[in-house]
Amino acid sequence: MVAPLLNTIRDYAWGSRTALPELMGVEPDGRPQAELWMGAHESASSVLPWGDSLYDVVSAGPADVLGQETTERFEGRFPFLAKLLAAEQPLSIQAHPSREQAIDGYARDEAAGIPRDAADRNYKDAWPKPEILIALGPFEALVGFRPLDGTVALLEALAPVGFEELTSLLRNGKLQDAFTQFMGSDRDTIRPLVSALGEACAQYAGDAFAVERETLAKLCADFPDDPGVLAALLLNRVRLERFEAVYLPAGNVHAYLSGFGFEVMANSDNVLRGGLTSKHIDVPELVSVVDFEPLTDPVLTAPPVVDGVATYETGAEYFAVHRIDLDDSERTVAGVGPRIVCCVAGSVEVGAGGTESDVTLSAGQSAFASGPEGPCILRGSGTAFVVSAR
Image 1: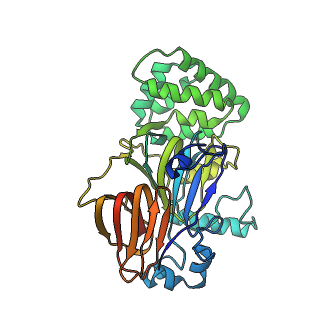
Image 2: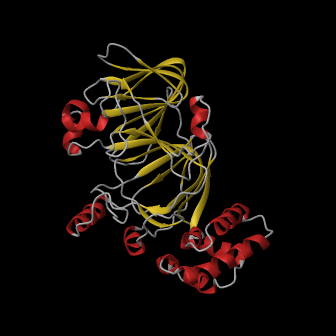
Image 3: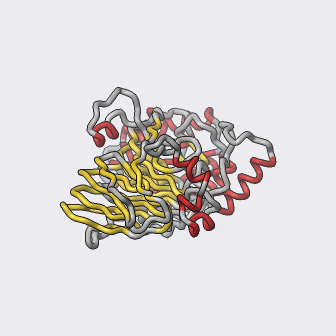
């Protein structure tokens, strides 16, 4: 089966009002359009042409849709979720658990009798949530902990009042203590520190940390009593250009700031938040999953294109991501299990061995190929991402 998908757009407040409409060639309606979901997720599944949700079709006969191997590996669950993500405002500072942490946390929440849809539940399922974000244009983010000497240099350059203890902790290699101290502080303690940081950013006139200063100044203004602003001091500030990416394995603390990208993740809702949000925050649980190893180079450069195919190497067992660039040409893309094809430029025809007809996609549209189908065959002039199980 190869079929076009009807997808849900989530209207989260941080979403862009223009990025998705511009990609799809439609007039914006003034509302934020944050994420377009592609896959078989319980809360916002893609819908097939005959009206059934992909989630219901997978649940009714997983081996027929996912293929036998993928069904056995992932216990009948669709292994990944793909999104077009358009951010106009910052998302929360967050991290995701490992597989073992998710299993344990889910069991604890179940034993405590917390409803699975409760706003204060930490673990919605027993899955991890590794993810990759591939920029479709300039994309700004905070990703992983900056090496400590870099953060000390930033603090010395800005010299905010009241940050002497933090600077001392970092000089002594105590990153976890510094992060935990920030995240566990109450709003009365945080507010004067955020104010002092904002003042320091306003007075800084150097060039070495201009981007960091600009980001921190905006966060201080928008979130005056949020500990996430201070946590942002500790994170790498990155800017992605088109087709560059960041990969976020378990424990990576991050926050998307703004931009438009294609995102792929394991099919999980497990997000542990630490700030820049009005949603549920559980600092002790967040700290328990965080990887405190500093990240020297968080950006994945755009991979080389070989015969029209660029492969993003992540090591994630739940998905593999390929970018296909077509110039009035044809490419065959192998894959394991179910596949989702998303066109992000031009026009692409999608077929597979044994299918009777192709599905034609324009920018912003996607198609599904079931696990038992042969390799995907793409034709046309444009760019598409093909996501499969690994």
